[in-house]
Length: 113
Length: 115
Image 1 (cartoon, one colour):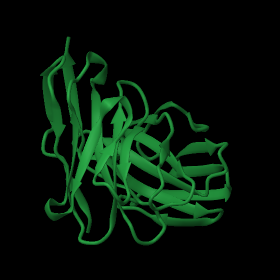
Image 2 (cartoon, chains in turn blue, orange):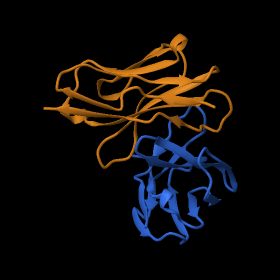
Image 3 (cartoon, rainbow over the protein chains, first blue to last red):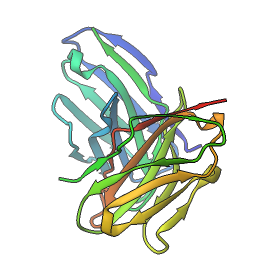
Image 4 (cartoon, one colour):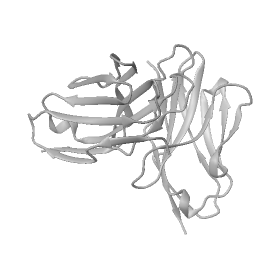
């Protein structure tokens, strides 16, 4: 398995609180992605990174921000969590973008009450 | 915008039955196509992928998929399913141009195999 860890694995928080999820990789891959998985929607891209300090929005980026200060870490922040952000969040990595397999982390289950 | 549609949301089969899961995408340019599987409680794993060349792609665990460009389809098949194939299956596409690798996923198909 690719060396991808996500923390925390489970989190319950309240509406309005900030939340940061961490993705850590040991593969030195350039590309990192954050997806959310919801029933009936499959996985949807939130944000992605194509290098240190280089990030861009995905299809469902509203309410989320990201940062990548090191190759190995990609942080996803919910500035003010809402119940609609209750979901399972997956991080993925890829060596070189288009055409390459993405390897997925174990996921973080986030519940916003 | 690109989109991926999986026609079957929930499929129930008996062991040894044949499987075909439909996947259609909407994008007129060059695409890369993937099937991922998510076993209960686990993360997504790649089953197979198509970039170019032979449109019949073979993956792990006896799965295969056929890319039919004229139909914008990439259906997944397996001749004889096993109970261990119970999982959720996702079709995904990324544009063949550019280098972002952004995946667009279908809604997923839950496969339940009865022993």
